Image (tube, rainbow, N blue to C red; front, side):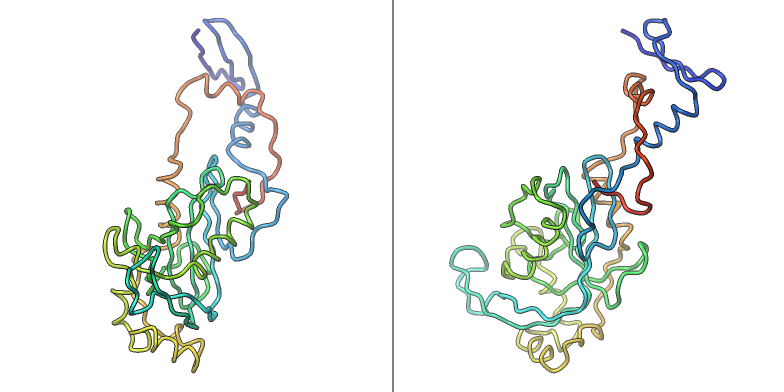
Length: 273
């Protein structure tokens, strides 16, 4: 069977084996094609902390941001017998953070291994804003990502969760699972090792904790190093890996757009499922 789509004047005609099979007004066909490339907003609310989102097919790249706050975290103890895993020893520390930005890519609602953690000294205002390197264990330049975040113990199967639950799960894992040296065993040192020299106040966990007690907003005055990436660049890299652009390659793949139902007006600026 041969399918051919022809444009004649103000009509689009689909021919099957040389015979006219179906036709539509060009305006309707292009309208359906446009509508099918968009997505309507879901009935569930946009999760808290989400600043930017990009949907393509079943993939979604979310940029989430947390304001400066102190967290009581579990940090690998200096005398831990092992760097991570069973037998690792932790200490509790009350630490102040600047703006923390997580960029996470999902496919079908599940984690993809594309997840990064950055800092900012000011809130995100535009998709072209620059990002800063963090000073965290579990974050490293690895897997072709600038600030890959280790989520090894987080169940990647989140398909049945709401978007709000997915976002909360990732944030909870970051601050509650325990900062250890697992990323040191992937493709290089974590940013905790490489960023301790940027400021005396974060040169050790003890110093970081003392400064946090004195001034919980001190991280906003630390000269964190630039990541060399904008929000837009990181989102584009992740989406290209998870769901590359694929245009229709045959008449058969365009056939559904003859009778595609109108999708309605999308929520401008936000791609959601």
